[in-house]
Figure 1 (cartoon, rainbow, N blue to C red):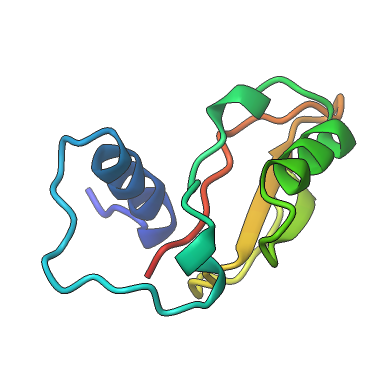
Figure 2: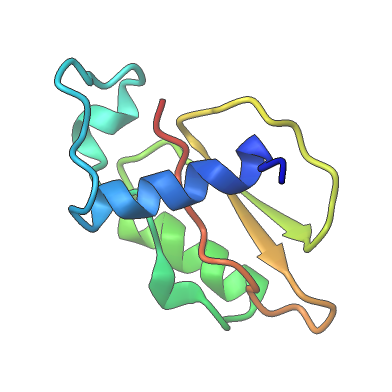
Length: 105
């Protein structure tokens, strides 16, 4: 069975944030916002309306330069890791379907 990288990254991030996987020894912030923005996952917005979830994420780090994008679930996206991009995937009713995760290189 072939596992897509797009599915593997959120799982690895979740395991690292929860303390199951240790972070790499030489991991350094490669994006200036990561020096002051420590939050990388927002499970509390699961089930919220898209615009409300976007506003919640932006309010949780007003000093951070986050690019929050609202997309329909299954939308075509690029696979590059942008350390300031957060994608909100919504179902057909406009509610957040997946836990948003910040890409940390």
